[in-house]
Length: 422
Image 1: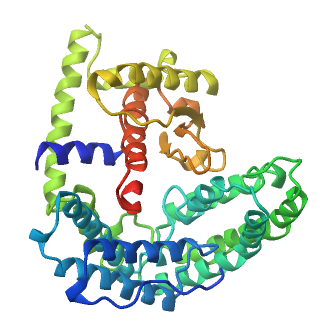
Image 2 (image 1 turned 180 degrees about the vertical axis):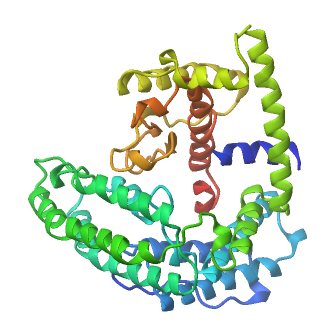
């Protein structure tokens, strides 16, 4: 694996029914990389115009055929006819197409939950970016809220089908998702993220609040009942993707996709074991250098229990994370010749997500919605958030990690739109 690929992997680690709109069928003799990109982005545009993600069988089959057509076009391109930029476009688009087609064939939409909430969390990400600047924006948003119960019902049907095909989330994941819903439901409607997209003096405020109370909250209650009284009872006890039908195949594809290499899970595991051993040796040397009175286990207990390593307030944790982030920002010019224009801020993980969420996450900025990049720090359950995890977390999620990676891609000019979103 070359050095550039290695750096790239480090950065990357941490409903109204509408027809898909694409250009006329391809003619192989006149096919160009530019035409294939236009067709791929036309597919994405059509998908984005739906109020909620569509996963009905007819829609997915049509999408699969269109993506396959683009994929076949890429395979038929003559490599020596492409310039350097087009070769990059071809390789990246091939990676994306292979992944999307795999998920369609595997029917990943039949088990849409994960430990952080899965599609439930995706809804929050989607809604938080909403801007209600025009009457059309407002009408679309209210239609979106009104259609949420139908979206949840569609998801329920797909999840039931998934369980019949032995493609189900395990009990632990389902229980976590129920907690996500509980966290949402205990928040008053006027303070929910669905209403938080507007100010109280917005002319559509009362209509939106009524929709949230009368449509959205009952939909969540109904979906929670489904999880508790149906899906959870049939969910497997064992965790791990290997327990579902063709789970090993799924895991192998995930390893290949995220490493962009033909490497087996077993090989990755062996690398991991070697790294754990190396890190353990370094830790033991640090313990010796500190003249700590105790063995390795005693030192871990010291780290986990001594109050000096833990914030007493949420604000203290945020301030420590922000200080580390700003210290690193000051060092960036020493190592990077090109930096993004988009600023970075440090904010808490949204309350609706925090109980089951990871320690931190990057939320991309947007020039379209006038939003800075955000390094989210989880301030829920402070005894589980030691200070000594913050340097690695801050550099990975903030700078020079995902903020540089994602915003430099977003700001790159003269490239296809799909490359601005990698």
